[in-house]
Structure formats: C-alpha cells, structure tokens
Length: 210
Image 1 (cartoon, one colour):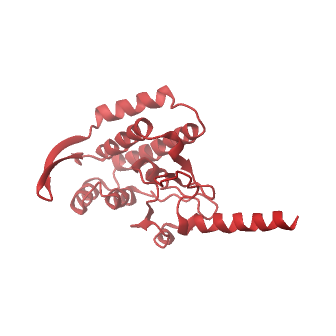
Image 2: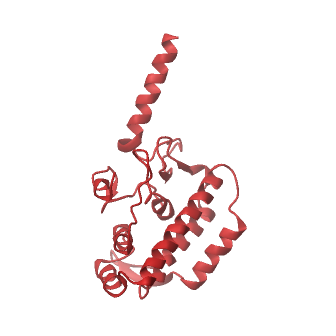
Image 3: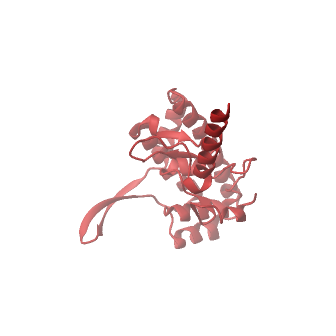
C-alpha cells in the first residue's frame, strides 16, 4: 500500500486519514497499517506540510512559503525526523494510557519544553457576526510546526477521559470515541466497523453450531 492509495480510503482527506477526532490521534494515524504492514505517510517535508494543510492548521500560502524556503534543507529533514519521533513517543504513551498507566514524567517534561519553545498564540477574530478567541501559531521556521502538536498532546492527556481513547480492534488506528454510549471499537465503520460486525456475526454462528 502506498501513499497514493491512501487517497481512496474512507475518512481520508488529502491522502491522509482523519478518523481520530483529535489532532494527536490523527498524527498517530499518519503511520497506519490497514492492510498489514505499517505505511509511512509523512515521507518527506513536502508531505508533512500537506498533512498540516489537510488538518487546517496551515493555509495554502503558509505551506507554500515554508516549502519554498525550507524544502530539501537540513532543517526540514531534521524537523521531519523530530515529528516522526514525537509521534512514536506519543503512540507509546497513548497505548500505556489506554491500558490504565500514567503518562511518563519525562514525556510531560518534553511536552512542556516544546510548548515553552513553540507556544500557541491567541487572537480575537470575528465569526458569524460575533467575536471569538482563536489559537494560532507562527510559521516562520520548520520548528514552528511543533507548536500545535505539543499543545494537542497536552490537551489529550489532560482534558479527555482515558476510557474514550482507544486503538481500533482491527488495525493500528487510534481514535477518540465521541459516541453517546462510548462503546465504539473501530476507527471507522467503513474501514473496520463492517469487518468487526462480520467477524462478530461469524463467531456467533460458530457458537450456535457447536
């Protein structure tokens, strides 16, 4: 499975999966394994910017400016490696958290350092005839891309119920269960939910025959 095939997946946008209902979980899902072997979707700085644009965190002009200035540079390569490493650190913590463990102090410190170095900012904007506050981040350098990632990880671990965050029963995708009952076990009905129901039905029929 390659990056181009991701464009045909249900729930995909811009060639990426957005099934997590939360930015950190969507970041984890940039290395999915829907057909077996994990597939890296953040293959280079350009696709990293495409992912940020697909999330709505970067405008087309912001992404184009960063790409024009930094693409194929050592700093662009370094931030790609850094974000991939952060993703896998967060994956380990999410799995630990889902299993009832606590977030490791070293990871909390890492997130605090990142948020201090690359802070999100707040501004007042008009929307539908009223003023609202909006968070944003500057996009002058590749390292600025860490701002929303660190912020969202902190918000995930501090602002959501652990029991609502889980890994799909049929793939490595993670998601925040926003359903009323909180009993969802798959990343997407179209991707894995149907497989889950088919497997459950087959298992029930086997039990009835035995």
